[in-house]
Length: 116
Length: 446
Image (tube, one colour):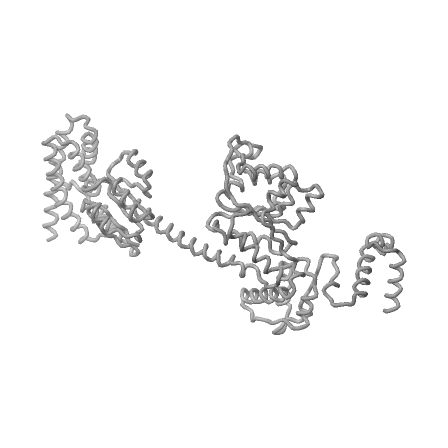
């Protein structure tokens, strides 16, 4: 299965500092699992402001780890929940974000284990 | 330089910190909340990278609180918000830069921090230069001499620096009028504001109006863009109009209006521009005499007279001649890495007896040349080349009897008027026979 993320940016800017890359992966896992769970909770409660806040927090990590399959989805979720428009399009967006991110979490966990 | 990062997202905080610290000149400190930052912020911190959406307070409120602690800190906001209105709002609130969280964030932030560091460096260099300029224009270092006429000048300069009164500086060419203007400005409370100098005799007549008042685009052929004039440039500071007596009458009336109304209109423009500046003027001419001769407007004369400072010619400054000669010699030797030289007694006498029509400017040139020409440790009389362009006699500097003085005056005038006894008699208001008698006596004595 091909990787859903790309670490080239992190590797390039750190001068291939593997320790730093591994550290970033660990922080990514911990942090975005938390944000994703908060996003799901606020989505269930239809708390759109909170959905926006958590989507907004996940967005930079998606850009940084180059998770291209979610690039447009996270931008749309951010916009729709913030402006409370196209609310019918939010459930499939949340669903796709969950599906892809969970696979990313698995892949990253494997990568960290491999390093260990 | 310490860079404060306020970021609640640990992934991004780590990413930014790592990037910033790749430059060994930077140290990055991460705070997760606005409150954590406020508890640690000091008045000496220079840069904050601030996340737009923090969990404990709005970005706008945090900026306000930061400013209460540190008014000069550069705040760079970083946000995943892509709305232009957010960026505009923050820039209006005084943030230094607004950077979006995307692939370019890293480079943009590093460039911004680099710019801030360069600006800080330029600012501190500017401060040092300002201090240097102030020292340079200290009264005693700018004008050398301790003769009585110069003591009076120093007193007037001190008074001129303490109040923002108009000052008119007069004196022969080379007496240091421009230096006095600079010293007055750099010792006044406007020292950190601009000093704009305009030499009326150095600008072609056709250009001077545009130079002073500026012009709008298309005001005349060749006016391809709007140009700010010297009056506007000097707004808030000091305007120094050098050689003001050289202005033609038409322009004098325009300048008078600008000085009276404290407002101008650019050439080709319709808007009146309010101005506030301090005025210093200088001339080598006798302005009152120019008024009498109809060359200078009387109303403008009274407008620019203010506190008059008359610089004495060097020939009336006695021992200052030697003070200046020594000062310029030492300065020249230092600049050219030469051994210091002294002045022989005869050379001193030669300097003291000369009339110095070019004043301080001339003595500087003369002693510099003397050093170059000199082969000894001291300057000899022969090393000093005096090349006066004026036909002014030096006899007043020599000590003679009254009779000899009178004879010298008569000889001088005879030479000046091609030995025309009629003209000289009329000029000196004496009879022709007196001139013939004195001439006979002179011939007999010689």
